[in-house]
Image (cartoon, rainbow, N blue to C red):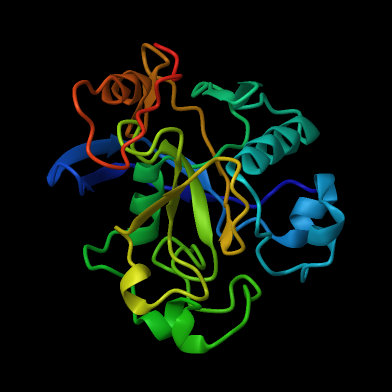
Length: 257
């Protein structure tokens, strides 16, 4: 597989909201690299695609991939280019090494900053011009870069397929669920906004889910936090005590940093 083309995303600050606490937090981001498109079926197959994914349109985003699939593909892509893999994995436990120069999933803060591209509105343009959604009445993901890019030169950050991010959705409420961003081809207008979050199990196979890759060593002094993500905060959230609201499933097996 040839090296992936990536766009340099400038440093900046972004306010992320927490729907459960109704609070916000300011995240200061370093510059990083991000693919202008979701990983396509042909890019996937160039490394190790299943037969089913080989049959997808080569220029459409690879989809129905699990979070674990995406992590493993990132490591294979890194090894193919002689880069240091960003992840190590033991069973269901995946560790991100922020100082590695290999391919990885963006954090939620990186994803939203890149999607907004300096805008503060729910979308970076008119939805019909920038995203494949339910309004287009298509039956599956469309070829990448078929609609207008945002100000950073990124295509399909809204619509087409949801994209896996590195972060847990909420270790207190949703266990090991990981975050998804962006909306998909069958989603209504309200679901295709820069701030909308969705989560799912890391081994879930979802027809409307794909991923795009980031790169960039962003090590912090502890190696336990980077670009809006914190291993310590993930663990602390999971330690919620007392009677739990109906449906809450804290991630009790999360290792203490």
